[in-house]
Amino acid sequence: MTNKIDISLQKAQSECSRTGLRLTDKRCKVLKILLQAAEPLSAYDIVDQFKQVFAESLSAMSAYRMLDFLMQANLVHKLETSNQYLACSHISCEHNHELPQFLICDQCHTVKEIGLSKQLLKELRGSIESTGFVLSSQQLELHGVCEACRAKQSE
Amino acid sequence: MTNKIDISLQKAQSECSRTGLRLTDKRCKVLKILLQAAEPLSAYDIVDQFKQVFAESLSAMSAYRMLDFLMQANLVHKLETSNQYLACSHISCEHNHELPQFLICDQCHTVKEIGLSKQLLKELRGSIESTGFVLSSQQLELHGVCEACRAKQSE
DNA sequence: TATATTATGTTATAACATAACAATTAGCAA
DNA sequence: TTGCTAATTGTTATGTTATAACATAATATA
Ligand SMILES: [Zn+2]
Ligand SMILES: [Zn+2]
Ligand SMILES: [Zn+2]
Ligand SMILES: [Zn+2]
Image 1 (cartoon, rainbow over the protein chains, first blue to last red):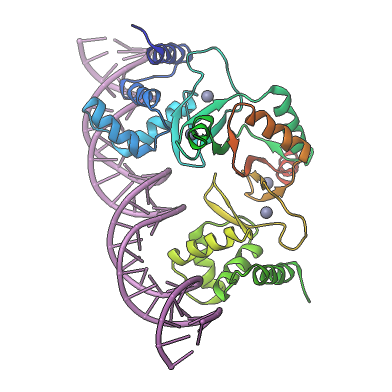
Image 2 (image 1 turned 90 degrees about the vertical axis):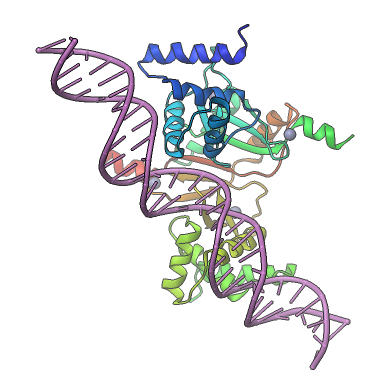
């Protein structure tokens, strides 16, 4: 059985080969941990899981380096507002994003990677750049409460 | 001579009195440091400046508590993407903001607190909340290069 | 003044991140 | 294959950001 995680891992592997990046065994395992996680993980969370899942040690230093690699390869994003890392939702699909956008639930800590409309992003960019400021491709991190948590509350 | 910083400090003081908050001497000094700073400061930067400027010690613990107070009083904002603090630009004016928005120059590190149009924010909010997600009032932090730095580069 | 509340001091420690250098492994040309 | 080079990972130390826990001081108010 090939599930979504395996498909993502294969896609990641082939994409890295294609662009000359080396998705080593350990890097791949870090990505797998993030793909399997229900929530974003801190670097030290990843170290712990690595030991548990693969019965192999990983120093924090190495974890940070592997996360840097995975971020450069666009396979992983960092949430700057919580110092946590998560796998990109778009590894297995063809859909690319210039500007990742995240909705972060402050109750259950799940994160949804969304795609705001091109039109809206264009307006946002236009409005900002009219002040003379030129945006780099910084992601949007928006905090709030997800639908599931709201439903639970109103029960 | 009453400059903008003094006016802001007075306004902060009167606003706190009005709402029953206590803007103590030390809290006021922390605010003053942030008002005088050209860039956002880390908590530990503030501790250092406190010693230099006022020849008085301040523990990191106290600095964090004072920053918490100042943020609750809406006098100071925290940049979550860089773990730094800055005075609100709107202390001395009447203009209120629900959602602070920052343009952060990654070259000179200056930060501009802007106000995006109500219309644009409404569209953004609408687009997000159509997914069932309810936003809390999280600020927008956008990174890029400011006009001054761009001018310098193209010289 | 007595009492409660708030603010600040102090120490320790947790959590997040990088620097510096050594050892190992993978890629590749001779 | 061998030896060279560059990339990866290991190791240790340290820097940076933030909070916990408990003591003391200042302030408000009854
Ligand atoms: Zn993504
Ligand atoms: Zn939720
Ligand atoms: Zn503000
Ligand atoms: Zn600049």
